[in-house]
Length: 307
Image 1 (cartoon, rainbow, N blue to C red):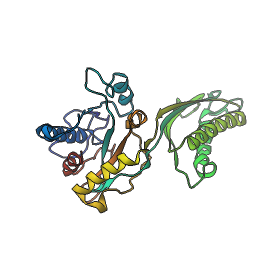
Image 2 (image 1 turned 135 degrees about the horizontal axis):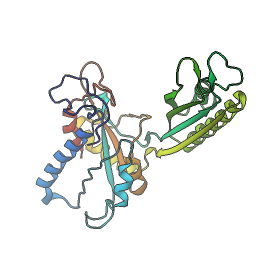
Image 3 (image 1 turned 180 degrees about the vertical axis):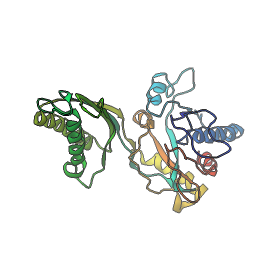
Image 4 (image 1 turned 90 degrees about the vertical axis):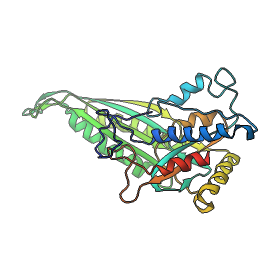
Protein backbone atom coordinates (compact mmCIF):
# COMPACT_ATOMS: atom_id res chain seq x y z
CA UNK A 1 0.00 0.00 0.00
CA UNK A 2 1.64 3.23 -1.18
CA UNK A 3 5.18 1.94 -1.66
CA UNK A 4 7.68 4.68 -2.53
CA UNK A 5 10.31 4.73 -5.32
CA UNK A 6 13.21 4.17 -2.91
CA UNK A 7 15.74 1.32 -2.85
CA UNK A 8 15.65 -0.16 0.64
CA UNK A 9 19.16 -0.36 2.12
CA UNK A 10 18.45 -2.11 5.43
CA UNK A 11 19.32 -5.73 6.14
CA UNK A 12 15.97 -6.61 7.71
CA UNK A 13 14.52 -10.04 7.00
CA UNK A 14 11.28 -8.36 5.95
CA UNK A 15 12.91 -5.80 3.64
CA UNK A 16 11.32 -5.10 0.27
CA UNK A 17 11.63 -7.90 -2.27
CA UNK A 18 11.04 -5.49 -5.16
CA UNK A 19 13.92 -3.51 -6.58
CA UNK A 20 13.55 0.25 -6.40
CA UNK A 21 10.43 0.35 -4.23
CA UNK A 22 9.82 -0.01 -0.49
CA UNK A 23 7.33 0.80 2.23
CA UNK A 24 9.05 3.91 3.56
CA UNK A 25 6.27 5.76 5.35
CA UNK A 26 4.39 3.22 7.45
CA UNK A 27 1.27 2.85 5.32
CA UNK A 28 1.61 -0.93 5.45
CA UNK A 29 1.48 -0.59 9.22
CA UNK A 30 -1.65 1.53 8.94
CA UNK A 31 -3.38 -1.22 6.95
CA UNK A 32 -2.25 -3.88 9.43
CA UNK A 33 -3.55 -1.81 12.34
CA UNK A 34 -6.92 -1.23 10.70
CA UNK A 35 -7.24 -4.94 9.91
CA UNK A 36 -6.50 -5.74 13.55
CA UNK A 37 -9.13 -3.25 14.67
CA UNK A 38 -11.56 -4.75 12.16
CA UNK A 39 -11.10 -8.23 13.62
CA UNK A 40 -11.75 -7.03 17.16
CA UNK A 41 -14.74 -4.91 16.15
CA UNK A 42 -16.23 -7.81 14.22
CA UNK A 43 -15.90 -10.12 17.20
CA UNK A 44 -17.58 -7.47 19.37
CA UNK A 45 -20.19 -6.48 16.78
CA UNK A 46 -23.13 -7.42 19.01
CA UNK A 47 -22.08 -4.71 21.48
CA UNK A 48 -21.91 -1.90 18.92
CA UNK A 49 -24.72 0.65 18.76
CA UNK A 50 -23.79 2.01 15.33
CA UNK A 51 -22.08 1.02 12.10
CA UNK A 52 -18.32 1.18 11.56
CA UNK A 53 -17.04 1.67 8.04
CA UNK A 54 -13.35 0.95 7.41
CA UNK A 55 -11.61 2.88 4.63
CA UNK A 56 -8.45 1.35 3.15
CA UNK A 57 -7.35 4.31 1.05
CA UNK A 58 -4.55 4.00 -1.51
CA UNK A 59 -2.62 6.70 -3.36
CA UNK A 60 -1.92 9.08 -0.49
CA UNK A 61 1.66 9.59 -1.64
CA UNK A 62 1.04 12.44 -4.03
CA UNK A 63 -1.83 10.97 -6.03
CA UNK A 64 -4.74 12.23 -3.89
CA UNK A 65 -6.57 8.97 -3.31
CA UNK A 66 -8.86 10.51 -0.69
CA UNK A 67 -10.84 12.85 -2.99
CA UNK A 68 -11.19 10.03 -5.51
CA UNK A 69 -12.72 7.79 -2.84
CA UNK A 70 -15.00 10.64 -1.79
CA UNK A 71 -16.14 10.99 -5.41
CA UNK A 72 -16.86 7.25 -5.43
CA UNK A 73 -19.14 7.68 -2.42
CA UNK A 74 -17.12 6.19 0.42
CA UNK A 75 -18.61 8.72 2.85
CA UNK A 76 -22.16 8.48 1.56
CA UNK A 77 -25.04 6.08 1.92
CA UNK A 78 -24.84 3.58 -0.93
CA UNK A 79 -23.48 0.26 -2.16
CA UNK A 80 -20.39 0.46 0.03
CA UNK A 81 -22.21 1.13 3.27
CA UNK A 82 -24.18 3.75 5.16
CA UNK A 83 -23.39 7.46 5.42
CA UNK A 84 -20.35 8.36 7.53
CA UNK A 85 -21.13 10.80 10.35
CA UNK A 86 -17.63 11.07 11.80
CA UNK A 87 -14.23 9.99 10.47
CA UNK A 88 -10.96 9.21 12.24
CA UNK A 89 -7.49 8.51 10.90
CA UNK A 90 -3.94 8.17 12.14
CA UNK A 91 -0.33 8.08 11.07
CA UNK A 92 2.38 5.96 12.65
CA UNK A 93 5.20 8.38 13.44
CA UNK A 94 8.80 7.21 13.72
CA UNK A 95 10.02 10.53 15.13
CA UNK A 96 8.25 10.03 18.46
CA UNK A 97 8.72 7.41 21.14
CA UNK A 98 6.56 4.32 21.21
CA UNK A 99 3.26 5.07 22.95
CA UNK A 100 3.26 8.83 22.48
CA UNK A 101 0.04 10.00 20.85
CA UNK A 102 -0.16 13.36 19.10
CA UNK A 103 -3.71 14.63 19.22
CA UNK A 104 -4.68 18.30 19.44
CA UNK A 105 -7.06 20.85 18.04
CA UNK A 106 -5.97 23.02 15.14
CA UNK A 107 -3.57 22.36 12.25
CA UNK A 108 -1.27 19.38 12.56
CA UNK A 109 -0.12 18.90 8.95
CA UNK A 110 0.51 21.48 6.24
CA UNK A 111 -0.53 22.50 2.76
CA UNK A 112 1.52 20.63 0.17
CA UNK A 113 2.00 22.65 -3.01
CA UNK A 114 4.60 22.12 -5.72
CA UNK A 115 6.14 24.28 -8.38
CA UNK A 116 8.20 24.22 -11.55
CA UNK A 117 10.25 27.17 -12.72
CA UNK A 118 11.41 27.25 -16.34
CA UNK A 119 14.41 29.50 -16.78
CA UNK A 120 15.21 30.45 -20.38
CA UNK A 121 18.22 32.33 -21.67
CA UNK A 122 20.36 32.62 -24.78
CA UNK A 123 22.99 29.94 -25.17
CA UNK A 124 26.46 30.13 -26.63
CA UNK A 125 30.08 29.10 -26.33
CA UNK A 126 31.49 29.06 -22.83
CA UNK A 127 34.54 30.98 -24.02
CA UNK A 128 32.46 33.77 -25.56
CA UNK A 129 29.75 34.77 -23.06
CA UNK A 130 29.08 38.15 -24.64
CA UNK A 131 25.67 38.27 -26.21
CA UNK A 132 24.39 35.29 -24.20
CA UNK A 133 21.97 35.08 -21.29
CA UNK A 134 23.27 32.33 -19.03
CA UNK A 135 20.30 30.30 -17.77
CA UNK A 136 22.48 28.66 -15.10
CA UNK A 137 23.37 32.06 -13.64
CA UNK A 138 19.72 33.09 -13.82
CA UNK A 139 18.62 29.90 -12.05
CA UNK A 140 21.26 30.34 -9.35
CA UNK A 141 19.95 33.85 -8.71
CA UNK A 142 16.38 32.54 -8.50
CA UNK A 143 17.25 29.80 -6.00
CA UNK A 144 19.23 32.24 -3.85
CA UNK A 145 16.52 34.90 -3.92
CA UNK A 146 13.77 32.41 -3.07
CA UNK A 147 15.44 31.78 0.28
CA UNK A 148 14.46 35.28 1.36
CA UNK A 149 10.74 34.52 1.07
CA UNK A 150 10.82 32.48 4.27
CA UNK A 151 13.59 34.36 6.07
CA UNK A 152 12.57 37.95 5.24
CA UNK A 153 9.00 38.12 3.91
CA UNK A 154 7.15 35.68 6.16
CA UNK A 155 6.27 36.54 9.73
CA UNK A 156 8.76 34.53 11.83
CA UNK A 157 5.95 33.53 14.19
CA UNK A 158 4.17 31.74 11.35
CA UNK A 159 5.31 28.47 9.81
CA UNK A 160 6.31 28.08 6.19
CA UNK A 161 8.72 26.12 4.00
CA UNK A 162 10.01 26.70 0.47
CA UNK A 163 12.28 23.95 -0.85
CA UNK A 164 13.95 23.80 -4.25
CA UNK A 165 14.29 20.05 -4.68
CA UNK A 166 15.74 19.67 -8.19
CA UNK A 167 17.65 21.82 -10.64
CA UNK A 168 18.44 20.54 -14.12
CA UNK A 169 20.08 22.22 -17.06
CA UNK A 170 23.14 22.59 -19.21
CA UNK A 171 24.74 20.50 -21.91
CA UNK A 172 28.52 20.49 -21.46
CA UNK A 173 31.30 22.26 -19.57
CA UNK A 174 32.00 24.67 -22.42
CA UNK A 175 28.39 25.51 -23.36
CA UNK A 176 26.39 28.35 -21.85
CA UNK A 177 22.97 26.86 -21.11
CA UNK A 178 19.82 28.32 -22.56
CA UNK A 179 17.37 26.42 -20.32
CA UNK A 180 17.25 25.31 -16.68
CA UNK A 181 14.33 23.77 -14.80
CA UNK A 182 13.82 24.10 -11.06
CA UNK A 183 11.22 22.11 -9.12
CA UNK A 184 10.26 22.14 -5.49
CA UNK A 185 7.59 22.26 -2.82
CA UNK A 186 6.08 24.83 -0.49
CA UNK A 187 4.37 24.22 2.84
CA UNK A 188 2.23 26.34 5.17
CA UNK A 189 -0.63 25.99 7.61
CA UNK A 190 -2.63 29.04 6.51
CA UNK A 191 -3.82 30.48 3.20
CA UNK A 192 -2.25 33.79 4.26
CA UNK A 193 1.25 32.32 4.23
CA UNK A 194 0.48 30.17 1.20
CA UNK A 195 -0.56 33.24 -0.81
CA UNK A 196 2.46 35.21 0.41
CA UNK A 197 4.86 32.48 -0.73
CA UNK A 198 3.20 32.10 -4.14
CA UNK A 199 3.04 35.85 -4.82
CA UNK A 200 6.63 36.51 -3.76
CA UNK A 201 7.86 33.62 -5.90
CA UNK A 202 6.19 35.23 -8.89
CA UNK A 203 7.72 38.62 -8.08
CA UNK A 204 11.19 37.12 -7.76
CA UNK A 205 10.96 35.21 -11.02
CA UNK A 206 9.88 38.36 -12.86
CA UNK A 207 12.57 40.45 -11.19
CA UNK A 208 15.41 38.04 -11.94
CA UNK A 209 14.27 37.67 -15.54
CA UNK A 210 14.29 41.44 -15.98
CA UNK A 211 17.68 41.79 -14.31
CA UNK A 212 19.42 39.17 -16.45
CA UNK A 213 17.44 39.62 -19.66
CA UNK A 214 16.00 36.14 -19.82
CA UNK A 215 12.54 34.66 -19.50
CA UNK A 216 11.38 32.88 -16.34
CA UNK A 217 8.00 31.19 -15.98
CA UNK A 218 6.57 29.95 -12.68
CA UNK A 219 4.08 27.07 -12.70
CA UNK A 220 2.63 26.92 -9.17
CA UNK A 221 0.39 23.93 -8.46
CA UNK A 222 -1.88 23.68 -5.44
CA UNK A 223 -1.80 20.32 -3.68
CA UNK A 224 -3.23 18.88 -0.46
CA UNK A 225 -4.92 21.29 1.95
CA UNK A 226 -3.73 21.29 5.57
CA UNK A 227 -4.96 18.73 8.06
CA UNK A 228 -6.90 20.72 10.65
CA UNK A 229 -8.66 19.19 13.62
CA UNK A 230 -11.58 21.61 13.82
CA UNK A 231 -13.96 19.53 15.93
CA UNK A 232 -13.09 19.61 19.67
CA UNK A 233 -15.58 16.85 20.47
CA UNK A 234 -13.85 14.48 18.01
CA UNK A 235 -10.42 15.36 19.38
CA UNK A 236 -11.72 14.56 22.85
CA UNK A 237 -12.98 11.17 21.66
CA UNK A 238 -9.46 10.24 20.50
CA UNK A 239 -7.78 11.62 23.62
CA UNK A 240 -10.14 9.68 25.87
CA UNK A 241 -9.54 6.46 23.95
CA UNK A 242 -5.78 6.98 23.83
CA UNK A 243 -5.56 7.71 27.55
CA UNK A 244 -6.97 4.24 28.24
CA UNK A 245 -4.16 2.69 26.19
CA UNK A 246 -1.06 4.82 26.84
CA UNK A 247 -2.06 6.91 29.86
CA UNK A 248 -3.37 10.46 30.07
CA UNK A 249 0.08 12.08 30.06
CA UNK A 250 0.90 10.59 26.65
CA UNK A 251 -2.51 10.80 25.02
CA UNK A 252 -2.69 14.42 23.90
CA UNK A 253 0.79 15.55 22.92
CA UNK A 254 1.35 18.27 20.34
CA UNK A 255 2.93 16.57 17.33
CA UNK A 256 2.86 19.00 14.41
CA UNK A 257 4.68 18.58 11.10
CA UNK A 258 5.08 20.42 7.81
CA UNK A 259 4.46 17.10 6.12
CA UNK A 260 1.15 16.64 4.30
CA UNK A 261 -1.66 14.10 4.25
CA UNK A 262 -4.75 13.85 2.06
CA UNK A 263 -6.91 12.89 5.03
CA UNK A 264 -7.51 16.64 4.97
CA UNK A 265 -10.05 16.09 2.20
CA UNK A 266 -12.09 13.80 4.49
CA UNK A 267 -12.05 16.42 7.25
CA UNK A 268 -13.43 18.96 4.79
CA UNK A 269 -16.45 16.69 4.32
CA UNK A 270 -17.13 15.28 7.79
CA UNK A 271 -16.36 15.98 11.44
CA UNK A 272 -13.43 13.94 12.65
CA UNK A 273 -9.90 13.82 13.95
CA UNK A 274 -6.46 12.86 12.67
CA UNK A 275 -3.74 11.88 15.12
CA UNK A 276 -0.20 10.51 15.36
CA UNK A 277 1.01 7.36 17.08
CA UNK A 278 4.67 7.29 18.06
CA UNK A 279 6.50 4.14 16.98
CA UNK A 280 10.22 4.99 17.11
CA UNK A 281 12.65 2.13 17.58
CA UNK A 282 15.38 2.49 20.23
CA UNK A 283 18.52 4.27 19.10
CA UNK A 284 18.87 6.25 15.89
CA UNK A 285 15.63 7.43 14.27
CA UNK A 286 14.65 5.69 11.04
CA UNK A 287 13.01 8.63 9.26
CA UNK A 288 10.01 8.43 6.95
CA UNK A 289 10.80 8.50 3.22
CA UNK A 290 14.35 7.25 3.80
CA UNK A 291 15.94 3.99 2.62
CA UNK A 292 16.44 2.77 6.21
CA UNK A 293 12.90 3.55 7.40
CA UNK A 294 11.57 1.18 10.05
CA UNK A 295 9.32 1.39 13.09
CA UNK A 296 8.45 -0.48 16.27
CA UNK A 297 5.59 -2.77 15.25
CA UNK A 298 4.08 -2.52 18.71
CA UNK A 299 2.85 0.84 17.47
CA UNK A 300 0.43 -1.08 15.26
CA UNK A 301 -1.18 -2.64 18.33
CA UNK A 302 -1.47 0.76 20.00
CA UNK A 303 -3.09 2.21 16.88
CA UNK A 304 -5.55 -0.67 16.61
CA UNK A 305 -6.36 -0.44 20.32
CA UNK A 306 -7.17 3.28 20.11
CA UNK A 307 -9.53 2.60 17.20
